[in-house]
Length: 143
Image 1 (cartoon, helix red, strand yellow):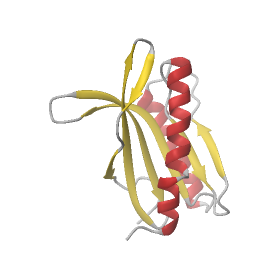
Image 2: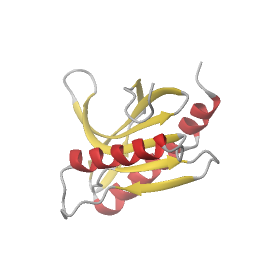
Image 3: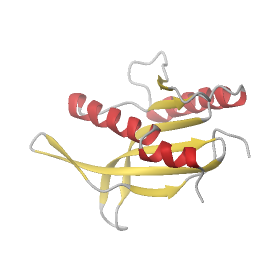
């Protein structure tokens, strides 16, 4: 059974915050760099970005930087949950590839989950599919 905090995070918390922000970036800019959303023990939510000296850094470099910051915050007790949001390509049925917003939510007391929101761009407008969820590997909070 999922921890009550994780249910809230997926239903209205970090997942929703991450998806809505990524959608706004896509609709405004047509793309986005990976970013994060954190929740402190008091429930307050903040957005975080990974800055490098590169104007267009590789996504993996930004993801690694965000994960290091998440781990530091988790170890010091500053975060009870984190979400890593990135733009990815996924396989929908083994053959069909799709762009998707990926949101990996981790909570100090629960199994991490990655949710994918597939999307296409047609005639200048984005169309979004159904959310796909799967268990993820723990990368922020120690076991």
